Image (cartoon, rainbow, N blue to C red):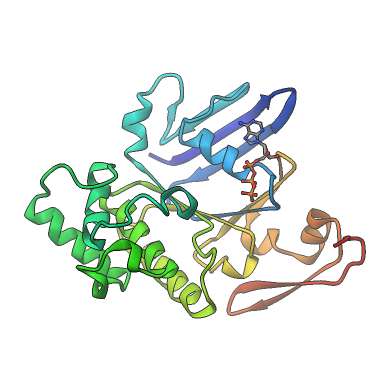
Length: 265
Ligand SMILES: Nc1ncnc2c1ncn2[C@@H]1O[C@H](COP(=O)(O)OP(=O)(O)OP(=O)(O)O)[C@@H](O)[C@H]1O
């Protein structure tokens, strides 16, 4: 398997609105991508399409070289982890943290099947890797936002996905928790069995060096794809945001400053 995602000339229309317009995006095995775009630019719509929850009006979508329309989507989804705090925030309130992680093995909310000893050990191992094993025996609702995000990533990893989508995982995190979570994600990418990562964010400084490629979405269209260093430049971002942007690289992360005047508050 060489290609993980192949979205070709995809258009999606809903209620006379074109929400995705001729989107082409390819992710090869081993690449980790960041997706950047303003609110409403179509990022979630695109991810829904990759998970087979939406069907393109035009164009084709293949994941793991299997074209939608010819595959069992439920089977395929077992290989895709999607971590989105807004989706899962309320679901596990009273569950023990390790049960939340373990339930990822069964793609269930709550734990209904009896896990094997190996599964239990693997859940603990993942919690250790994500530096959240100290939370064992606590209930999910008592964990902080940053701790919950780590648990949800560990949960997604329980199913050994080949593709892991991290949808704004640093939302609501304080500075330290954010840096800790980014370090966990970097360590995860260095594992020999690491899944391909897709990281959705509004903040370029969260795009750590493991994200070698970047997709810019604007108004339902692909504005630019390419190597992160070629995409996160002053000239590209000034065009993209339609206002003056200066870019300063620090620890191989792009820090943006607004220098333009044509944005109204
Ligand atoms: N089912 C739908 N019917 C009509 N419009 C929709 C539907 N789903 C999304 N939209 C619209 O499509 C546009 C793109 O939405 P989408 O959620 O993909 O953006 P996004 O880039 O993920 O935004 P954000 O960064 O705010 O999460 C928005 O204008 C949204 O209101």
